[in-house]
Amino acid sequence: KNEVEQSPQNLTAQEGEFITINCSYSVGISALHWLQQHPGGGIVSLFMLSSGKKKHGRLIATINIQEKHSSLHITASHPRDSAVYICAVTNTGNQFYFGTGTSLTVIP
Amino acid sequence: EPEVTQTPSHQVTQMGQEVILRCVPISNHLYFYWYRQILGQKVEFLVSFYNNEISEKSEIFDDQFSVERPDGSNFTLKIRSTKLEDSAMYFCASSDPRDLAGGSYEQYFGPGTRLTVT
Image 1 (cartoon, rainbow over the protein chains, first blue to last red):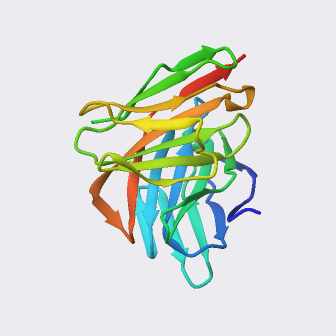
Image 2: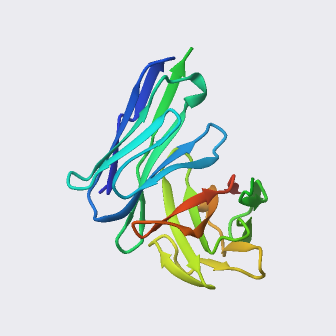
Image 3: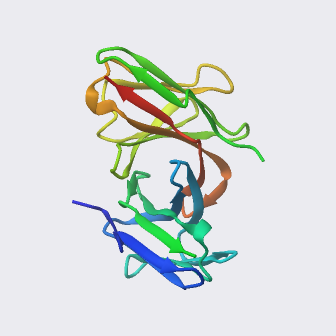
């Protein structure tokens, strides 16, 4: 069973498009993380949130605790945004659960 | 900008051998983590470490694995008697105790060590 589900698994977008990646989880959480994994394998933490909304540049992350759902939005997408985006949660026992990732390709 | 470093970047070992993967966390961070990602699969949590002891570990982190902070800078993952299925990318991460939100910490990841067991 997957404690964290992401959709879509794969996403192709034209440069400039608005992108949404969704994450649903089934455990009680203390925080939700959005991570970016580049083709070379490196992982970068984009957001950590436990409520509401956060924004960094063109990236916006929201979380709805009642619905156990989070979204990552990318505005004005660019080819350099091409990467795998991973949703992960830490439960109240501080265990970590990762989604399988969404592979995003932005075409010029 | 401070960063987490890992060595080696790629380790090839024979089945049954022991390997030690090394990580240097960001210097003022106090929480340390190891993750693994088997090729084509999702990232999996192995262990977290704080105050010189394991604070959480997953089912994967059995007696074959151990972690240590041998000095003030390194954080190591030892895998004893490696198996073919241990082949994976291993990521180290660290957290600053001040980056706390909702009981969790923002993590900074190293570039990973690719372990290949032959």
